[in-house]
Amino acid sequence: MSGVQCLATENIWFDKRCYDEAEKCFYEGANGPTSQAKTALLQPKVSPQKRRHRNSSSHAGGDQELVSRMKSMELENHTLHKVVEEMRAALQKLESRVVVLEKSPAAVTCVKVAPVKQVKVENDDDDIDLFGSDEDDEEAERIKQERIDSYAAKKSKKPTLIAKSSILLDVKPWDDETDMGKLEECVRSVQMDGLLWGAGKLVPVGYGIKKLQINCVVEDDKVGTDILEEEITKFEDYIQSVDVAAFNKI
Image (cartoon, rainbow, N blue to C red):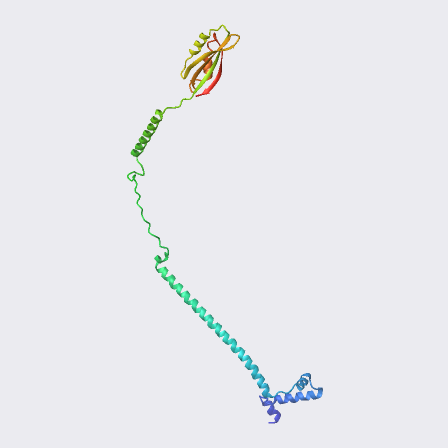
C-alpha cells in the first residue's frame, strides 16, 4: 500500500493545524501579511501563563458575581417560602373555624339579646271585654245619655243674659190742638212681650206745638224699633210721626 493510499484510508488528520499554518505562511509571503496578521505582529506577545492568568481572573470575577446572585436568589426564595407557609397556616385556621361554625349553628349568633322584662301593668279595666258586647254598648250609651241630660240640666239652671236696650222716642202730634194727654195714653196702650214704658215729658217744638218725649226699655230678641214705631203710628188721629231720639244698649 502506498503512502497516498494510507492517507486516504486515515479517518483522523492529526497534523491539520500544521498544514493550515504552512498554507497561511505561503499566502502571506505571496500577497503580504493581512491586516489581522499585522495587528497580531504589532501586539505584544503574551505568554501562555499570563493568558491563562487573565482567563482565570475573568472566570473568577464571573464566578463571584454568579455566586452572589445565587445567594440573593436563595435568600429571596427562603423569604417567599416563609410567607407561603404563614399564609397556608392562616388558611388552615380559617378552614377549621368555618368547619366549627357549620357544625354548631348556635355559635353564629354573636350578639346576646337581653331577656325582655315583663312588666305587669295594673289596670282597673281588666274585666272589660275588649271585643265588646251588646250589653256593654247599651250600658255605655245609657251612661252617655245620663251625662248629656245632667249637663243640659245644669246649663238650664244658669241665668241667661238677656240683651236689652233703652230707647228714647219723639212722638209728634198733628198740630197744637192735639190732646197730648190722650196721645200719651195711646202710646202707653201699646203692650207687647219684652216692652216696658218709662217716664215721659212734653217738649216744646215751636208755634205752640209740643212733642211727647217718652223712654222705654225693650228686649232686643223680642222687640225691634221698626215694630214699635209701626204699632205707635196706628193711632193716626193723634200721632203724626215717631222718631228715635236715642238708642243705648243696657
